[in-house]
Image 1 (cartoon, rainbow, N blue to C red):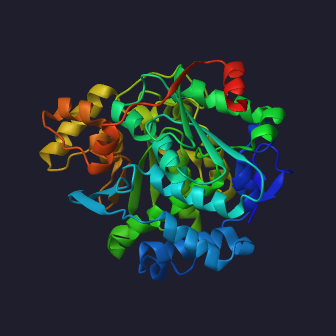
Image 2 (spheres, rainbow, N blue to C red):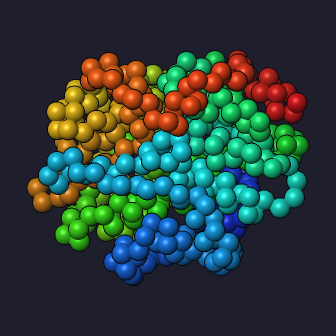
Length: 424
């Protein structure tokens, strides 16, 4: 698999290098030089999740990793289902919260851990990543206990849900967590500064597990195929997919699935009040505002890292960016939508509710709608219980960590302090 740096196309790497390196020169994102078009889509959709995913990832990665190794990686990573639930006529939810940390990031995080363990070579590795909620837990659990791999996770203090925090800040061992006095964009900026520091990068074997890492992104492609496999052939023919969007990795993976030949008619990028992309598509000006805290905190991102990949896919395929629909949803609208969904018999959480609301606004007669549910409602227990006036039982995975003490360090938004911490 050959990949190039979007900012500097002359920088080219193979899959193993991209996984180990994370980012290219000048913080450029790696992107596949070639995305094959799969002709046997119906045959693929008839296969079970793991077997189908092995074939999809094999087609993307190529012969660089042996079939036997890749099959083992996928089998070890994808140990849980991604069911599609009917919410109403022609509208379905893809539930991506049945993994160990109850969020869609389990797919990417676990596959990346398998990939890095396979291609790592010698020397120490430090995973440094920023999280707005769910990435931290997925990465922490995926890498927990792996030999010679240290993980440091930055998150905005007080701006993720208490249960999200408990899920990844209670492990210890090779997992260190740091609460930064700032917002998610500050955390992400610190990660980028670290990658720009050649001395630091070399000293600790720096790598990232954000959706900027190509292995995470490729893993996410697989659940779009899984969703389509659970719909009828007729429903698949006019399929519209609404993606709750923060850092835009999830949407990028869906666009790669479409490029491979999965019959998705169009995508909707659904955001909260952090509406950089909807404004950009509407007005043509890239003008990030200050990040604001919302009910859907995993989408509280004003400078989405993966946006260059989205534009690259549209450019490469000759698609018009104006065909990407994108709308922002306020917190009061999110609350109203959660109650509306409850009335239909489906209990959701803020991120999924946003994707559902924009999908409903956008769906045309004759189309089938699918929206992504990226986290279990219990991960947002306090807000969901308040809005819906119900009591949510805690799943066992959450309850176990809820009883444990937080092990996080606290830090100001200062790169020199972070560098000293990492080198120590």
